[in-house]
Length: 201
Image (cartoon, rainbow, N blue to C red; front, top):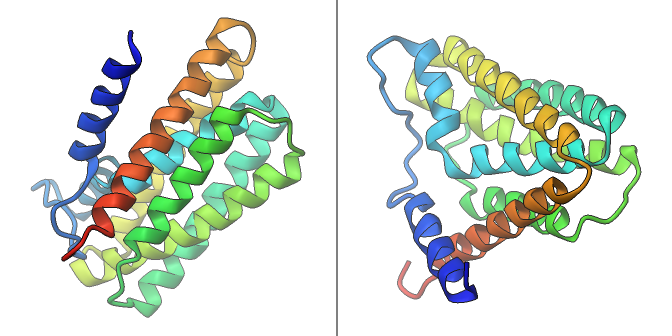
């Protein structure tokens, strides 16, 4: 694949991931608040991309770092979610959540050896921020604690699968594939930031 093709593909994917309007409501699946919460993770680009980037980054560092970071991010997301649910702030921090997955994608692409504590600390920050905003959206959209539980369930399953995949791909040419995924995540983040700060936005 040529550089021009990679750039064009990244631009298309990035454009598709950019929400037209940042409203604080969730997609109504018609199956109830729990399933609305599950769907939220998969239709919110910053959330799904940050889970993918963090899972891959932790998994490449090995099983110990993967397990530790996985536990930390799930607990932090839960704490942040419950806090956001209780406070229900009307603020949407699109730039902040975009920067988190952009930074994690860049770290994944660079692939430097970092201690388990550092990766876990990243998981703590990501979990608190994204969880807080998820909880706030669950409160303002009316799906409440049940919807937040659905979102947390999806997070736990998705993060576990991504981290486990990265652990098995930590050696050989597959590691390069994971690093390339990090560069694509970074590119999407840059495109989203450009969209958020475009003139007249």
